[in-house]
Amino acid sequence: MHQAKGEAHYQHAKQTFTYFESFHKAKASYEPARKFKNSPLIPETYLEVKQGLITLCRSLGDAKTSEYLNEATTLLETLLLDNQTHPEIKQRLQRKFARLYQLEVDTLVESGDKINALEKAEARKNFCLQWMRPISLNRTDSPTYPLIRDLQTTGKPR
Image (cartoon, rainbow, N blue to C red; front, side, top):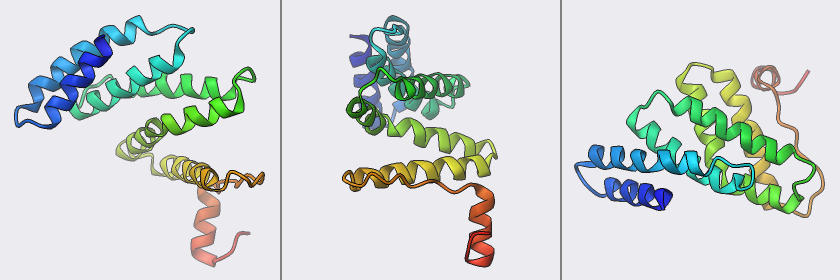
C-alpha cells in the first residue's frame, strides 16, 4: 500500500508544476514500504521499493540517495551471485533493475569517479548486448579503462 501510494504521488508530481510537495509526500510513503519490505523473503519487492525511493531521492537531492543505492545494488549483486537463484530469474532481475546500475554510473560520474563509471557502463553495455543475442554462449568481457585508453591512442590493445 505504501509503495503504491508513493508511486502515485511520484507520478502526480511529474505532471504538475508543484512537484516538490508531491515528491516529499511520495518519499514519506516510500519510507515505511522500504522498512516493511526489508525482508529476505521478498527481496525483489524490496528492490522495487528501493528503486522508486532512489529515483525520488535523487530528484530531491536527498543525501540518503547514495546509501540507498549502495544497499540496493549490494542486494541485487547478492541475488545474482547466489547459486540458489535460477539463471532465468537472474536474467529477469538484471533486466528489471538495470536502472539501478545506470543510477550507479550517474552517481559515479557526478562524484568525479569517471574511470570507475566508464568501466561499469561498459560492463552493463556488454551485458545488455548479450540480451540481444541469447543464443550465444560466449560472454563478452568488458575492457578496463587502461585498455580503453590504449585502444584510443594506438587503435589496438597491448
